[in-house]
Length: 344
Image (cartoon, rainbow, N blue to C red; front, side, top):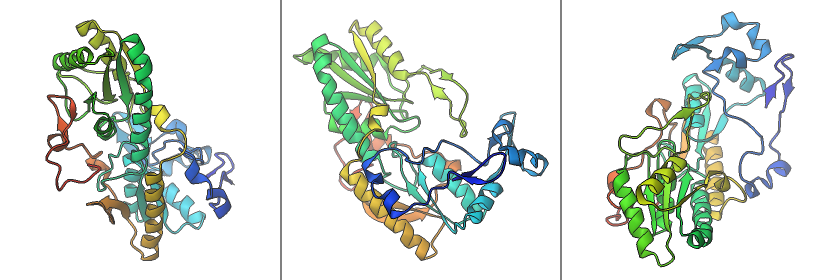
């Protein structure tokens, strides 16, 4: 939903009728075609025309030398104007972080964690994670044919700016792949040695490496490119390409860099994600009916529950490296897992 920036008339309002939402679970992504926004930190150029006339009344925010505006009260006025008593915010740490901001400003919110990164604090599982793992497993296994034919090292870049859950979860399914995560700066020389070992032991002469987009080796730095988005995130140069070039230079092996990310976002979600999404939705309605707002539905100890909306000041949930990652072998740690949850 929204308003015409010049006339303030309501536009793009989509009532969520049974007929409209009946087929939503068959498609990936958002059928609303929404884009990333952060209403508590808005640049002057992005403020709607109707609000620019009242620019002197809008709260200002200083951020890294840039003058921004906090439009949270305008958001609340819009919600109340549409007769919305409680907002259900569905998304990752950025979306739920702003949901926390709305909550602190007094507007009732219930959160549902949804991100293939699975890095939302307060829950063991976010909608989309299992679909991401299944798609990554299928994608990488399909590439074995041409990697073996060309005797190549396949380097696969996947989600994970701050957390390595998707990379490590994929590595749990693929026993012969090396895995790199943002939470641990890796030894490049040791990685190249492991890759060479995999290549030589494999009769078909190929090897596999999966890296989170935020992974980095000891002493390395990766360039950030483009303008920051509404949450201050700038795109990073493709670490997969840097990694592929370095492996080729150190080992003499030919590499092929493949980006897995957009394939994971496409198509029909997998059954487990549909089950959890449907259940999370029903739980959110129950919480609203019980007047238990300012909460997020979650999985805790493998059980459905609810918890406080995640505070954005705490950032994304990191992977427990000591428990789940073998940094010497660049592989998931599968031993000593009694008592630990299935999804980290």
